[in-house]
Every structure is written in structure tokens, then in C-alpha cells.
Image (cartoon, rainbow over all chains, first blue to last red):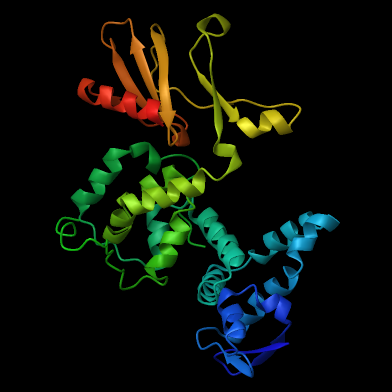
Length: 159
Length: 172
């Protein structure tokens, strides 16, 4: 078992087979730096619980193909990313920090799917981006491919 | 965007001071978006415009999107005899091997007028190079069609570029 500590001082025990899906922790274990508790100063307990849930479910990913559990895993993934926008960002940041490739892939794809049909205004608001383009520059981009800004699928809601 | 080039050989994108995600994560997410969304999101901010138009990003996006099985297209050109209009249809090559029934999807067609002859010269990186001839105003027009956009965007290629492009396409 490996002990992980979140930035709000909560400790979690995770099986080594699960936790080595994180390249970062795998390297720490190989280098003999994981003898006691591994502090994770960038991750809060709420996010860490989500990450551990994912790691535990994906522990036997290699075996899933043999035992026909692929659909089960796919369903889990779909449910897993069904979370709030801010929460998804926290998990992406944690997956990036811990270097968990599959989790990063899953969450970034989910973020992309959510952004895909959003209006430019909605994207700016969702990601808290300030528009620093001049009106002329913006109009030039729109004129370049006006059809990309039109269509019934364009969604102006922020969530 | 001016002034960025030449100052350094490593492309640096200005970070949005307010953005809640760091630039490397924004790149990860945006590289998973379809081309239409990317064209739209160029107008989000200066840093997004610089990112989406950079050759590094375009390469990453292309290698990610061509990894997907569905994007390996087989192109079928409908003959006028079989319908009232020219159209391109495509289906994933893999589906021909794996599925008992394969549905060909309409890929769109750039020009309304269909009373002329057309040749596909070649394709690479989800672009098709077409050559129209036989009608006055479109005589010898060469068109580059982007498959990823369902035929919505196309470029008319000037004669000078044509020779260069056709040799690139043949090499690819």
C-alpha cells in the first residue's frame, strides 16, 4: 500500500498496482522515495478521492479486455466525467501533475466535447478569459469563416 | 501577433492573466476539438489566436485527429448518371473490413454549378485537391477541399501554386 496526503492534510491508502498508473508516483517508488507518506501539495482531498476512484477502477485495465469488462469500464468512464466544470478542471490539473495519461486523455476529451459547440462569449466566461482582441481583429476572424460562427448548434449558455 | 516571430525560436504564447487553466492544458483540450470549433475559437483572445494558428498546434491536432479510425476516408465520387448532382461520399476504410454494411456519408460539395467535368488530383492531411474544367468561368479551376469541414471550406488555388501542390500530393 502507498499513502498519499492531500493539501488539506488527509491521508489515503492506495494499492501500489493502482497508484503506479501515475508516472510521477511510479518513478518515486522506483527511486525509493515513497517509503512513507507522499505529500501532494497541489491536490485537495475532494479531487484526490475522484482520482483514486479512477485508479482503483482502472487497476485491471489489461485484464478487462480478456474478461469482457470493456463495456463496464467505458460506462464507468462516461459516468466519471459527468461532473461540474470546475471539478473537471481540478481533476485535469491533478491528472497532469500526477502524470496519469489515460485520465488526462479522458478528461481533456470531455472538456473538448463540452466546449465544442459553445459560443465564443460562453467560452470566455467559462474559462475566465479576457478578450484582448480589437473589434476590427475580431471581425476579421469572423469574416474569414463566417459559417463557423453560425448554426443551430451554437450554445451560448455557461455550464 | 507581429513581433513574436524572430525574437525567439521557441514559440511563446502570452498567458491569459485571468484564465483558470495553464496554457499547456488549454493546448491539450483545444487539440481535441474539431476544425470548425477551432476556427470559431480563434476569436476568443490573442493567445488563443496565436496558439490555434501555430504550426506546432496544427501538427499536434492533425496527428491526434488522424489517429481516429473514422477519419481514414475512402472517397467515392458520384457520377452524374446516377443522380442529379455531383457529390462526394466517404466512409472509413476500416468499416469495409469490419462491418457487414457500410454507410457512406455525404462530405459536401463546394460548388453549386455541376455542369462541368471534375478530377480528384490527390489528397493529403484531410485535404483533397480537385481540378474542374470545361466551363467558362470555372475553366481550369483548381480547388483544395478540407474534408474535416464537410466540404464547407475550400480554396481556389492560383495556377502558380498548382504545380507545386500536385507534386506534393503525388509524393505524399
